[in-house]
Length: 585
View 1 (tube, rainbow, N blue to C red):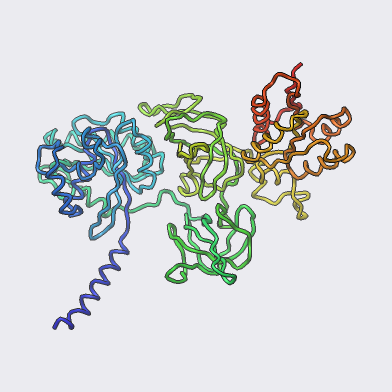
View 2: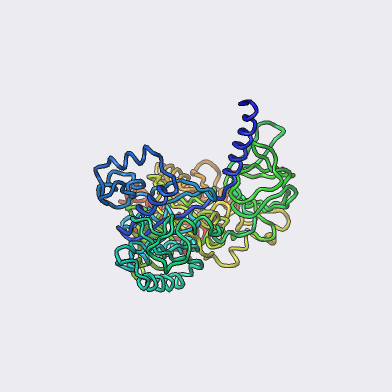
């Protein structure tokens, strides 16, 4: 008898697993003012949907920190840190996972306090939907407006306004109607398209999972019903192919593939793709996975692509649709959420990590800082922790990006402090700020030498991220060595040339060759007037002479001056119109 039942059980279990794996996933984040009941709402969702284990419930029942006075304090199911439990506020982002018969869910319970804006923005960055709690007794607060602004900033266009604590206002319909009207006006001003307002009591469980009998005037969906049925809209994800290369897979001489995750669009064998930055075209030969080859790869799938042609690709390169390439530029404007205690300062060097690439960059201009309480724009020279601003950046080499509103994956980046390796900021690219002419250099074949297969000076500069120059150090060989090392570590292509290593007559031809190669030359020695004239004829405005040995300038001061001069050589910097000399009169 048992043997006859077992095949049916195995079949049912297999079909159950298949259905569970194929459930749609909804990621959503919660936010609201302090003590609006975010953690209580999530705890209630988990409890009433049977998403809490018995040992967790037992632990909560035994907890000495019970702020509700009931057998179960639902907020303790999500507030995991001891400091959170003691203070009664959410500090860090708490992720919770549960599922129903219709969907799987990942919840990000984000902090409501202004001090933890960076945590809130981080938790909401991957969400498809936002739940903003509004205290029915207090109404819309500055924190509510701030959180709605951040969600809109992150491209979340599907928002639930949960009007909580309706039990404190006797479940009155006019209170809900007034707050619903105010919230919809706020959402419209922020261009949040899809809004659902639901009156609830997270503490009592009204309209959270089960429909409330105390609010018969409300005929809409409960919070759970809405979460289970709302259309999961991709956050303005473009249909163009974007496939960032993460690594090259070459287990043997017969196989060469490129691993990555599909950021947007779809890929099929035979599709034509364009490789950036090389701009070579090829076709997809096969889509390889551990479980076998695929006929199509869709967004968020991690796959390995085999290409028909042997082209040079490496980590950070991008495969795109040939008829709809992304922006290619080293200058762009972005909205930045600052995460670090040390403020963002203009012209300070940072590492920009963007879609598999990591390049050096700096903030060139802060257009404005956002007053998060009034949602107004103000001028600023730096950005403090938890502040949001609109900033213009310049990178040492071009990035391949789309506006964040169009594609989250290629429109976002993080800023890293190169000294501490700490993540200091998160950015959402809004537009390209480089001139149209400079933006086209990498997108269209260059004229002149490049049209005949040669490499132009502009192309070389774009690849290196800087212009060539000659830095003269007057007989200070120790300084010259240190300068060469410092420039190399800052990403410059540099070469140290010492006096006496070649004949004076050969100096112009050697410098000319190094100049054509786009190299920054550090020359250690003393020049005659004729040699100086020869160098100026080659380098022009980019011939810089550092202090002589007999001056009182220290070695560190000379290095500092030299590195400051070198920063003006980066692509996009204002190169001086005249040769700079730091000699003392």
